[in-house]
Each structure stands twice: as structure tokens, then as C-alpha cells.
Length: 220
Image (cartoon, rainbow, N blue to C red; front, side, top):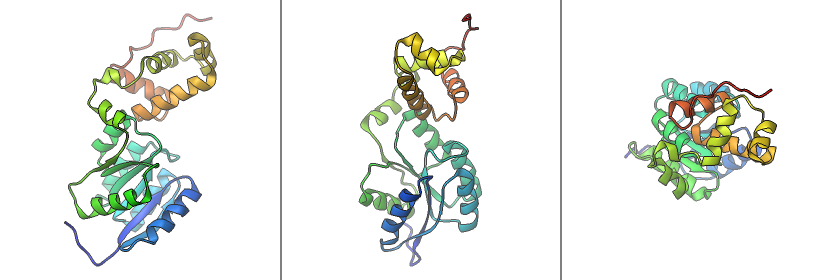
């Protein structure tokens, strides 16, 4: 266990300023914790961590810029002693797998109570081998599932049509639903696969044998 009279230094990276400010106020009020910087983008995170070398980085999974996985990988090289805790609205198993493989020490849903976050920060800092997860039971169960079970049948159908370069409107017409529903399916797919775009999602799904490579479109 690591013990020090110095405060545990923290950097917060989230694109919502009000969230950062609220989180900073909570953390600065805790004994032994000190927020030393804030950023709202992946590039801002890299620059700030390079300068501050904080003990803990709280990283929003959906910040503008590079994907969370790429950002974590670069941060781990840049400041290997900085422990990264992901904060997210989503807990897709594929994304969680990728981030754990990249070296994160914690993954917490933003719905957790602030006491849980403070406890996670202290645990990650004081116990070098500990990884803290606060995610849904469904996500944990899916992490043990076969790859084909990661996406629902409807999500695979949407992604297969997206692989054929169909627009959201065309996909909606094909599966008899609304564009808003298609967008929701795609958003869920991106989170589950840790993808940054349609092309990225399609490529990752093909690599994981979740969908087959698209056939040439015959639409006119």
C-alpha cells in the first residue's frame, strides 16, 4: 500500500464544464485529494498530463478528439505513473475490454455516488494491483460471452446495412423503423465496440467476426 503525506493529485478530463466544476468542488473538499487541472479534449488531456504528471486522471469516455482507447494508450506511454479511471454514461463490454487491455485502473458509470468515486480514487492510488469497476451486471456478464453475443441481432442488422454504405434514412426504411432508432442503435454499437465512426465500427465488427464483409450494393 502506498502512503504519503502529499495529497493525491487529480486531473479531470470531460467536455462538460459544469460537470468538471462540480466534480472538482467535491474532490477538493476531500482530505488528501487535490485537483490540479482540467481539460475538455483528448489533446488537452495529453498536454495537461504531460505538464502535471498527476497521480490520477479521471477521463470521460466520450471526449472530443481521439478515441478513449487511443487516448489511454498514449497517456500510459506519456505518464506511466498516472493511474487512469474512466467515467462514462455507458458500459459496453467490448469498450470495457479494450480499455482494460490499454491499462486503465478503473471504469465507473457517471451514475455512481460521489462516495464511490472518492473510494475508487483512494483504492487505485493506494493499492497498485487493484482495478475498480462500477458497471452493470449485464455488461460484466457480456464480458464473459462469446463475441457473437456482444451485439443484439438488430444491432448486427443495422451495422451490416451501414457496411453497405446505406444512409440512416435508407437503413430505417429497410428495417421499418425511424431514423432516430437507427441513430440509437449506431450509438450503442459504437460504445460496445469502442468505435469512433461507422467505418471503425464496421472494421472492428468484421475483425471480431460479428458481421460478414459487405457485398457490393445493388440499390439504384
